Amino acid sequence: MQYTTFGRTTGLRVSEVALGAGTFGTTVAAGTDRDEARRILDRFADAGGTFIDTAESYQGSESEEILGELLTGRRHHFTLATKFTYGVGVDPGVLAVGNSRQNMRRAVEDSLKRLRTDHIDLLWVHMPDTVTPMDEIVRGLDDLTRRGLILHAGLSNFPAWRTSRAVTLAELRGQAPVIGVQFEYSLVERTADREILPMAEALGLGGALWSPLGGGLLTGKYRTSSEGRLSDWGRIVHTEDTHRKTAVVDRVLAVAKETGVPAAQVAVAWVREFASRAATPLVPVIGPRTLPQLEDYLAALDVQLDAAHYEGLDEVSSVSLGQPHDVAAASLPRLLGGDASHFRAPTVPVA
Image (cartoon, rainbow, N blue to C red):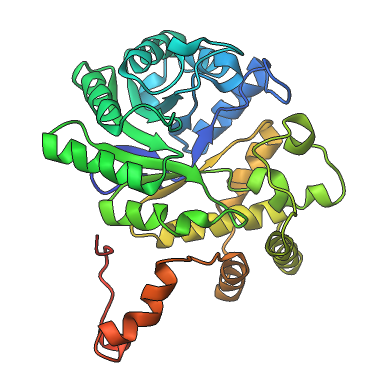
């Protein structure tokens, strides 16, 4: 296991992959019981993993409760991240959801009790609620940081323009910075290439990439069965509903056959290689439900794709950047005096 700082603006150290604990618990279908969760966490730690990601809403808050129990006596060995926004339970009530300072404070105080700790290393705002201004979110995160309840803050599943505004507000006011973003990223979901990734690289934000297997689609298993998230959850999952996704799965399976490596490991290895080439630290978030699934994820860390395989997967999975990126790319030679090769791109993208 290798390590990095989470983004270019902090000294927060994390392992190259994060353990997503969304399945820890049995409140909802397809969960992981306490004994298996312990085995998964122990094996992750033995492999050198230090970064754990959960949320107050995962498994009806049982994920945090299990982690609190399992981390007792070794909390200091891990960078612990959790999220708030959704609240807890089927109907938490209007005051216990969203991103207001009121709910933010409530959520963090409750999470600290369940996690049996006095601070959260990284608090994620789980999702935009469409009504709370970014100004209030930034002020709330600053309050919690100054109280020592959280050390760092980030935004999960936020559009780039909202994150950019939050970063700017914090910088101008000398408030606790937003240090990272979390978003879905895999060979079948690369729309973050349009705005989120360039923003993260320009601002030096760390990136946590969830669902590197596209909800299981990239394993190829849904071509022969519906077992897995498709049947157990029925959400947060991809299907072969476009020609592009079918072409991506075809290519992953072809590379798996050529290399003798399972398709899931090929997909994770591609994301890991992609992350290593980024101008800011990117950390895949893996979500094993069982110990054998974790072993597959860990085995992917030793898979090295050759240039042809990496580039082939990159090409088939790429997405159109759209407006205004396509127009800007077409105009680049003229803007650089007729020959773009005369200019060397900066190591850090121009903001």
